[in-house]
Length: 113
Length: 113
Image (cartoon, rainbow over all chains, first blue to last red; front, top):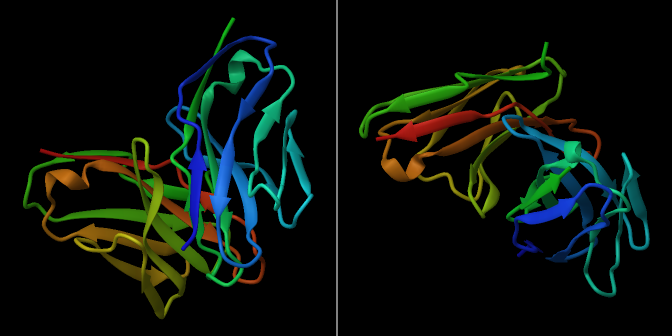
């Protein structure tokens, strides 16, 4: 079956530091990969996605590249801000599974001024 | 107004009580989902519905039931609540015709004493 593994948090960084949150996956076929962000007290929001190998998703300064050879989709940002403090979820959907998402456990990011 | 609205936002109740969580959407999407979120486990799918006449069990459906009253409404019931159903519950929607990730409500925090 499908599974997503994320690095455990919390990740604590100073403002303007470089961010990497690791995500690896196991899936049959050719999944689409996603990063979601959850701000305190809110639901999940799509941050970025990639639908095939070597695609790079990007949004709001965040990037992630779909690496089929390493089954990874690591999230990066060059300079984090306090407002980036949130929980980040890696997820996948297998095109053969009715568009249902499989989520990782989430990684909490705390950015200090 | 939010695209996906959940009510109530918070609920505290006792073991054995029947509880209904409601979800309504204004996106016109055919597909609706209920997830629960537990610390460190990400989101897990409880039930999903591809249209008004379609109901499917997800990964963790035991102890739950759902009703799709209309395209825009999808409710989740706990017939006899137990403490390990204490969690954050999210409703989500997606477009039937595209492999797009779901849109989420802001969640219902449910505590069962």
